[in-house]
Amino acid sequence: MSTTDLTQDTINAAVWSACDTFRGTVDPSIYKDYVLTMLFLKYVSDVWQDHYDEYKVQYGDHPELIEEMLKNERFVLPASANFYALHEKRHQPGNGERIDKALHAIEDANIGKLRDVFQDISFNSNKLGEEQQKNDILRHLLEDFAKPELNLRPSRIGHLDIIGNAYEFLIKNFASTSGKKAGEFYTPPEVSTLMARLMAPQEGDEICDPTCGSGSLLLKCGRLIRERTGSRKYALHGQEAIGSTWALAKMNMFLHGEDNHRIEWGDTIRNPKLLDGANGLKHFDIVVANPPFSLEKWGHEGADADPFSRFRRGVPPRTKGDYAFILHMIETMKPRSGRMAVVVPHGVLFRGAAEGRIRKQLIDENLLDVVIGLPEKLFYGTGIPAAVLVFRKKKADDKVLFIDASRDYQDGKNQNFLREVDLQRIFDTVQVRQNVDKYAYLASPAEITENEYNLNIPRYVDTFEEEEEIDLVAVRREREKLKDELARLEEQMAGYLKELGYE
Image (cartoon, rainbow, N blue to C red; front, side, top):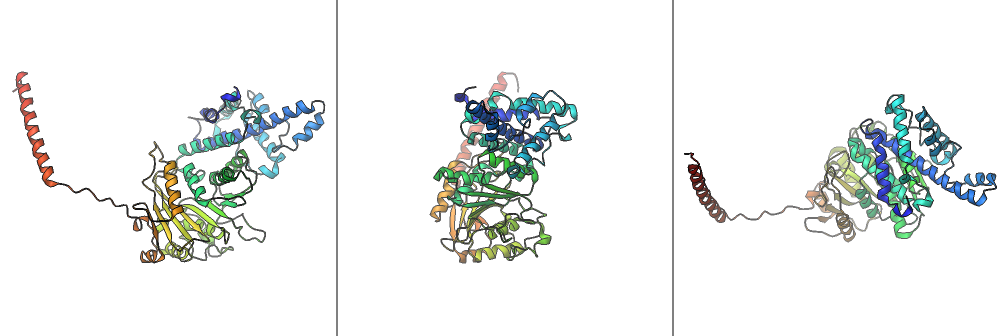
């Protein structure tokens, strides 16, 4: 296949086709990790081989020099720990064991970048069936990634985005087939885009997602800076509680060329790992997140004694962790430049008791800036509508802008999605910060107080449409006309039946 035949769709179709090896045998929530890891292995192997071939042309008579040059590669591949060696032995027993050994050898050779990345994935696992079935599945997988369409050498594909985009394409497709588990690792791309635009990331910003999943929100913020400035002077930070999802995020960062990242593995509420030099919480210019909705076991038992004082405004309910994540994010915003966007279920806007007291405190401190109601069925794994809350440490005024964007979307087969025109309307409304009939309302502190700090969007944005008045006289006239027409048809039908011999 020539370079001119290479398109994003070609790569996407090839990697999605590789999933056929597992379909009907292994659940997508399980096999996604195998396919995504194999894509990463194939990419680093192709890059290494491409550079090796270049060095061989330049320094063919000096193998020791080639070996030294390869030690400076972005990823170092030990002998036999690469895709080609695995593919060559694919017909032999032990594919799972060989792949695991290769991954661990690559991890050891790149320990600073890949420490623990492959510890939660085993190609030798019984999840893939008994030994013969497992060996056959992995042979097919190796053959799928050896196809010409998946030659990922830099000299062929030209730029890294096409690989990162293919990885994102896979993650999105896995999310759409993974049911409830999908929300654990993926935020719909248009929601990520909206949140990134609302945060307006700038060159030099430090950006954090404390529940980063596979890293899509962070990557959107980074991409926006590159598109607007051409600069890579920014830093991406994240934390993820689920080990396999954390590994996806790490690989996702590398495949997008985002080497300046710090993604930690651990529970953000119980054990935050993004700390400053003095063992306090690190502060960021931008904090974005799509935390798990109303998490039951979020860490309530240790909240009173939190060493970072994140819950000084109140401790969230034992069985609903939404405000635990919000309060953590609030504490990690920089004092002057800090801004944050968080996805929440609508209950966060109006539930009372402890949540009501926390909400009141955040509003009284003038931290809440915008409340955006989104359409239903946007998020994988749940059909409920959600909202995006925007908080800022330094606001332009003391008001809160409410936007009801719940009716602007495109219907989809399984998921609805926001169109570019819908995203732009939300963004423009936030920028202008004025009332828009049946869409947006800028509420004063007095109005919010009058509503007892209830932020339910219909209290502020009136979307009621008056029904057209019914002309009863005209309706009666139409009814009489229809009755006459029906009588005429009945008479005509009776004539036809008589002709046919039916009385």
